[in-house]
Image (cartoon, rainbow, N blue to C red; front, side, top):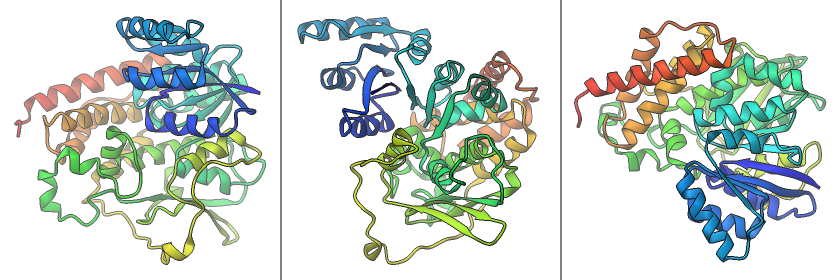
Length: 395
């Protein structure tokens, strides 16, 4: 039986992971769970899975959870708080695998800690890899950690790679990666109406149930831009060899084009339990709880190229990965600030790419050769983005 730590257990990926784990109690034991501030859901998870450790962001919430657990007769779960505790539980000797599902830059340090400790890292937090780039991949290689992608697209690519493939390698015979995208909720919306879209409209994804931040990223296609950067690192590919393809049905999750003309595609229902179960069971397979794909109800599969005028964030991501160094960290930080401001109704939807563009044009990137350099770039980009947003008119 393997011990698992879930960083971000109360989010959509964390909840889906626990659903899969519960189906295979003979395979995995939940050692640690962490959450930002969803105390009620974390308490319910503690009751069901009896983890040895849980981590919350604030000590006040941690104390409240301790009180509840004691009242419920569960005093053996040790409740911790703070960012340092996230790193500590990710490195526990009894933890074999770490599900890295904390959204955004907050997941960087604990995910990096898991890689340094030689754990099997189930990577759902794309921002951690986008920010730290080759620094992260070098730590994986140095420690002997296993890196298994959880994003549906990267997991699909991994499944279409040769049987003995390991993340970070150059796969023999691969010509291109075709990264699919749903196009989000505004694929057909007139461009002159994008100024007025609301946060509720932006988070209404047509195919997937996701958190608010990643749903907005899908609407701008920054999510796909971050995935391009991630794919460059995970599969050791130049950005020119990664093509984004809009596939509205979200049935094909990505494809790999080989030099002999063979194109392999991974298909399945749009259910995150599928890539989660694949990674947890790898190199075997076990049941995920997802419904089988019904091709007769799908009927047709459509593909189209993304419109750069509609999705400027995608072009910005390609620019960032080509610039290299700390530019991807700058892109990511600016996006996080802009998306948060949009969700708080401080800026318009179309101000998100403008904020990112401003930061990329203003900040000179440096080499991303230390974690301090990455975190400095992240801090400067956030400050720059906030200053720019403060100058925008509130609508």
